[in-house]
Length: 140
Image (cartoon, rainbow, N blue to C red):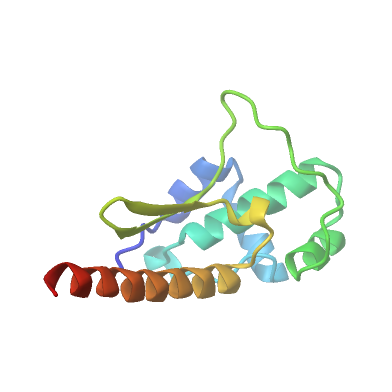
């Protein structure tokens, strides 16, 4: 899988966070460490999602300590924001097979990156099983 990665400058532009803030969140352990070091460091969609979630909670007045708890799996003190035209959301779009795609908003679904990976793996295995049966039926 060739997932999109971002430079620190691109990540800061997408999240409207300063480089200093991103580095601080990494230092606190709120955001995962980048892939690579120094100027070669790259950031993934997971980093983007982490920063957007932290930003949303922080702008709602949630302390960094409480944000740490929320990121560890506790219930969010901030209700989901109502969507309206112009709302920006980060979604995972999974291509399963021709005509089959899954779109997930992990934050809204309340699942962690690890749970998302497991979910995608299960969906892909199920699709392979079902589509394999379909192909056998059409040949036999």
